[in-house]
Length: 163
Image 1 (cartoon, one colour):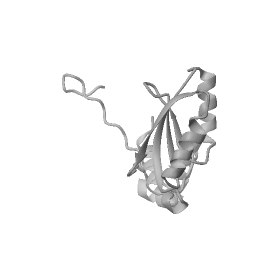
Image 2 (image 1 turned 180 degrees about the vertical axis):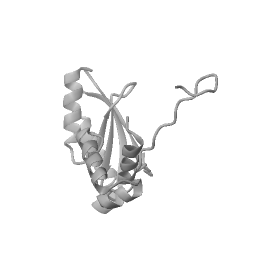
Image 3 (image 1 turned 90 degrees about the horizontal axis):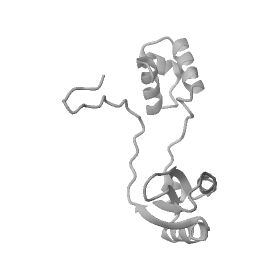
């Protein structure tokens, strides 16, 4: 868990990771040296894992996005790990999620057009021996939170909050 200062630093960096340490320190009300040290510790602890550019996919020739759910067999750690590694290496793939339930994987892809999506499905997935089924859903709109907020405390059945 993060304390109040670390949470504030993380929140401000999520809003704009390009701002200076001095600006973040001013916003959270601490000395720049304190802010720099806390940020360094957040990186060391793995809370801050990197700083990324938010790119416009259509500007990169990726006008069609889809979520592809896939089922693989046999369902073993070796098959799961190998499939995940192979999917994330494909240029069309943005994210790979290992899931529980009727689907073993959710794969977020971005391609040029529907023809390229069809080629991805038939040439990249359908030919794999471990894939026993898949389906795709085209994404019309994608909204993503840029700031992860603190979770509220759960409410108990009696209406009170958990301690």
